[in-house]
Amino acid sequence: EEYYAALRNRLTAVKIGTGFSELDARLTEGLAPGNMSVIAARPGMGKSALGANIIRHLSRQGIQSLWLTYEMTAVSQMDRLVAIEAGLPLTAILRLKDMDEEKQELIFHTVERIKTWPIILDDRRVVYWRDVLAALTRSQRDADVRVVFVDLFDKLADFEGPDQAHIMSRKLQ
Image (cartoon, rainbow, N blue to C red; front, top):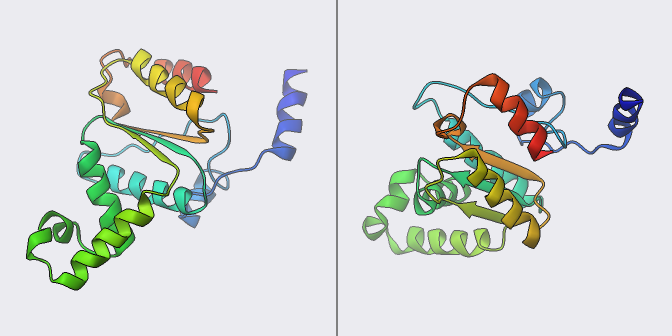
């Protein structure tokens, strides 16, 4: 009976594209409701940048995202997002006073545009899985969050590997 319900759900479930067709194909056509997708790689390989690009794509479609970032501050993540959206290198955002007036204006207009996007960015120094669930509960009270990004999932103090990831995934559903 549970299997038939799962099959019926697949008929009506709307998958959410990441904005990267090759990644969507590997995720069986995008992010599926109720599923947890994990992007893993060694440090410095671009996981956070990929997350920022996916959030940008979702936000431009009006899809509400909760972005829990435990390595970087909200300001650092917004710097990254503004650089991506403005089409400028991150160094341009970080060295704003050295930019010409036109680029400064572009950056500020980009910030105004991003402020309208449906993103909840939470950079609390969370260290436990229960804090992730609390952040999700808080955000669900105020918005219809469709996608949750947890940057540095493995840094949670109570993360115990793949078995715990499965349990976490079930709770998020």
